[in-house]
Image (cartoon, rainbow, N blue to C red; front, side, top):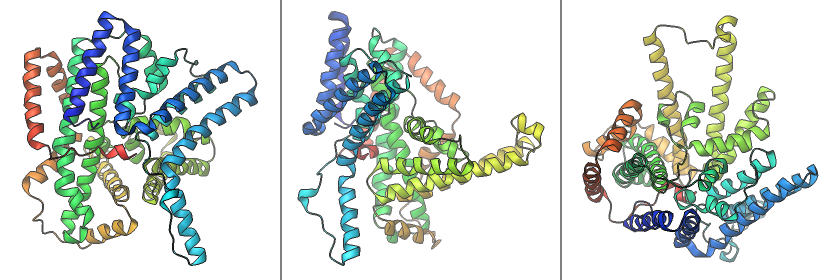
Length: 491
């Protein structure tokens, strides 16, 4: 049930009316039961056969967290933590990476024996459960937080099941922490006019990003260029690479906007997940802005437990690389994703090494004050703009390996860009304008966005309705014949 379909609009309208009607006439508890049932129904609409998996995984983690909190013996507590991590990663590894593992094992056997590499269909997992990467991380983080003593075990089994399965974040995030979501299910639900206006605004913005920008760039530029790069000039292929950077941002941030807006209309607030990532002036800044819920999860549950930056510089670089390699693998069972993670790990290590070298060269007094960049404001602006430009192009270079199915295809794209040809019959002005809007919107001052949001929220209901009607007309005109799935649904 895609967020960008009429079916989801009908589903959400029914959930919205039913949820708030229950709050008014029956109370908060029936509302929680209702939301859990519709969330499981939402998940079953993708593939009902995996519904027992999410229920069983949630149940085991809930019970293990309570057992860990009661247990005082360190070894027993650690054993139960290992059990829940092994269970969650076992589910994730089997359903998402089993085919990848047996294919590579078959390739290695073929390399050693000279026999053809083949894997029977009987040994394959047909389709991994949708959203397994997201709900596995969310449920596992709850048990880890309880083990660390950062979170008390939750008393309500129903609320915990809803925390994991709540449909706005179930399929593709954001990865919501238990400390952020569980307390909201304990409070009496409410929805102010301002929150309702904000939710509608976010849903509308998300649909525009997805349908008008992301889908059009994908269908009319990106998919064509990445499928047959040899048919296009260097300029057109480069536009295709920029187009994919814009497409994946508009697609995923658009999904997140719809998810946050949908949750807000149900009285639940999710944390921010994107912050104009292509404004980043280095890779560390990029990961503070891109998929914030994933980057902070990897930091708190992988990078810091590995040692973070508490050891030697070499150990810090090792921890960065391991984190990003596994972060790449989290996105998909392919060496392309692993290499994408490697590129970001390498870039983060180089960024850190450069910053440390610059810091050491500064005078002690300036170092203690934080060391502002020398030069006039104009020079500092130029330096920062250059850093933003370099970071953006490194991210785009890495996106090539994220998008292509094989390394040979990535080489073909890079080789075509190297031809430096400039004819561009496949770049009509409308397409260039869409690409420009998708990328340059990052650099619109945030206060203008806040003014637009505030103006919509403050507008009378008839004005909001008229604006949303105009957006709906625009979406209908821009929509393709069939709804295009969100990019991150495959992860």
